[in-house]
Image (cartoon, one colour):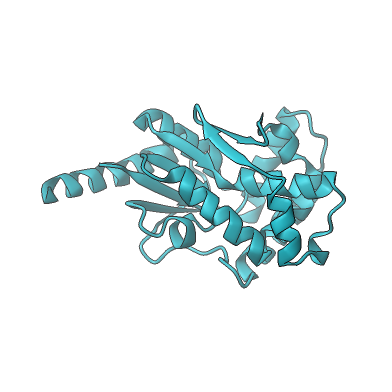
Length: 226
């Protein structure tokens, strides 16, 4: 069977780390859709494009200059592997605005579905279980307090040599939560059939173990039906 695992949740819940480990353990592909939105946001910055001033025609022109590719379990844009450049605070400040644009979401949703097509894969983001892969066999929604998520994100940024304060990271997370959960198109929310896991106080290994238990139960259930 082709197993699709959707892992959603707000910024800083550990989606990327957990999703990567799940994919490694199950020996299947892993796709970070948030990286795609960040890459587009960086394209906006590099080309002085204001997300508040674009229309559908502008989006069509933009995507004539943008090409995503997924090979060897890595994501590329315009032939260049996505790096830590897309994780900068500058990108973080506008990525939710870019992601709230309906035309951008429609374009990236189609690309994400195509990249996940016909394979077993772990896909993480904010609307995977609800919009991108509503037919995913396993749907997980990770949560955590804003304070805990800010501490995690700050640690990640410091380890990458990015100098930023806790307040800056916390304020960005609160703002992103507000924008992501209130946008008209594909708002951040758990799918009705998603399993919600509160990661406060849990290690990455503990979260991974919980998800693997859910995955194994699903696999056994499907095998019985075959």
